[in-house]
Amino acid sequence: MRSGVAENTMSNRVLVVHLGKTGMSFVRHFVEQGWQVDIVDERASPPEQDALHEEYPQLTVRKVAGYEQLSATCYDKVAVSSGIALSRLPAQLPLCGDLECFLAGMRQARHWPRLVCITGTNGKSTVAHLVTRMIQSAGSTAEAVGNIGRPLLDALGNWRRSKKQPDCVVAELSSFQLAALNGDLNADVACLLNVAADHLDWHGSLSKYAAAKAKIYTGATIAIYNTGDAISSQAATQAKTQIGVSATDAEVCWQIKNHKLICRDLDLAPLPCVDLLSAGIMPDLACAALTIAGQIMPEHDCVSHLDYLRKAEGLPHRFATIERDEKLVYVDDSKATNVAATVAALNALDKHCVLIAGGVAKGQSFDELNDVIATKARAVILIGQDASLIAQALKNSDTPVSFASDMQSAVELAHAEALRLNVDYVLLSPACASTDQFSNYAARGMAFRRAVTTCIKHVDAVA
Image (cartoon, rainbow, N blue to C red; front, side):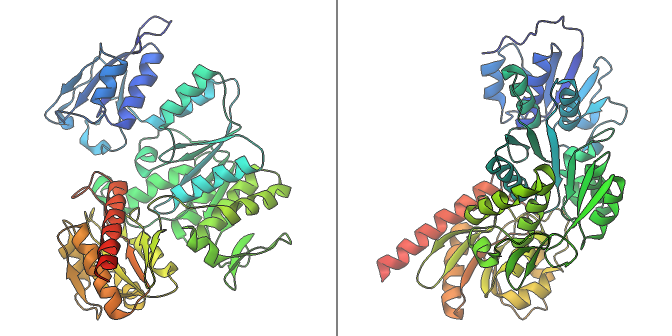
């Protein structure tokens, strides 16, 4: 249990809106800074309520009918969790996000670690993970924070209490966090991997979503940008130095050539791309990670970065091979919560698949799936709330589309179709959010894995 009072006199008041993981990190942060904290939530039982009662029994959550009606005339700050659209709160409120508070805390520290910030519609978690491990493998301390590691403010509080900070902070940032940022980010190295239609229900339009992502480069010293993405390329011009990334552009440092990962500037042994795919790492993301790590560490450490990559594994639920039997490979890409991610996963396959997709559409168009499904998928199994929207987009496709009521049924049907059509992969890559049937994409991925195990056991028993 925490006392909830810092040494300095309590003089400021903050209203924390929405008690999730980010909301709880707000509570810890402001209580430890000596602020008076109030909390509101639309939900009767917020997910972090038990943690709140355990750590701060003197604090309670006040239930409100809607965030749109909040009045905060007595508060110095209104701290909003990243899952809540800013448009849902009155414009006159003194809003702040966790990224803004994190940056303010970093600037107060005696030793300010080098700051790497990574965002993008797809691949940001994988790249942040790889960059962190590459820096560590080269002998420096690095910590991943934000969406991939500790919440930003929990990490900041831990460094403050321990009086110890890493040499480098690798922050994976969402469009929600960036949208709430006032002022410049001022990263040492910033990277916008790509921009495709996503979270349009939250941002309201693709242009607003892209503008939020572009904030990653505000005040940046070095911008790592995608030469094949117009939004990333244009936004990078805000930074002092721009360095391009591409899997195929001969002008960039790390690239893919003849199915091998090679370095233009150094004579290093190439890494077969098939090894990366087997480990759940898409080659273009490996190129981005190597480029970012090379800007943080001295050039001679490229060898250690590549050595790490040779034995690296990707993240759970991101293009991860979970099971192989004599005829099929099962791939969990549940983290593909938008169309662009599913297109990337399908394009990465070297052979045909049966695709399982569906969930919450988030305002997306699914038309982009047509061409890649025609090339890579022999059958599509749809699940979830907006399965009919995907089916409508594929209505003129020659690829057969079927529906399943749940994940177990979907896997059983996909298994049967894969054997009938003599394909090599069963791929879960939903192109949708998971919240219609699951708590998050990880729970959806675990359900897929359980269903695959059950299906294989049943087949073995029958055989």
